[in-house]
Image 1 (cartoon, rainbow, N blue to C red):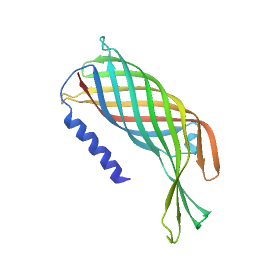
Image 2: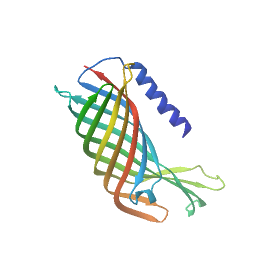
Image 3: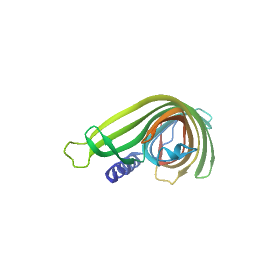
Length: 209
């Protein structure tokens, strides 16, 4: 997991270094995500983290944009000792979400800070990854993906863009999102309910013609 975090940070630094001090109608940038499950969903999934990107097109008035978000989130693992087909061993369950959303964004600039608000909806592919391994390692651990599903969902987000004079803008955002009727698998069974979480995002945005 530590290597994954270093890889994500390296990608962000790379894109930031490649971004030029440009202005244009298109805004692009990679982002880090931290997810905090809410409203009962926190009993089924631990906090998550992930990597994503946003892209938006600003119309001529520069206050209204059409925005698209792409994201992958991996929620915290739960490990339990259970009887499995290869003997008594460990089962690790991890929930994952692949997301694509689209919607309008409006902005208001005040000096070096730009406030943005967006309401978006789209598709959320949600699944549970189960890893089986026995205590004595007589067989290699293996993974199984179960309950993969694609559901509709929506989110509302707000954030701040900071123009620090180096080209790319620093982007700090907050998002509340809900996946409709998502099935979550735990050690005690499967549950179908709306999965909501509060997401903190940090990344860079640069503008191109």
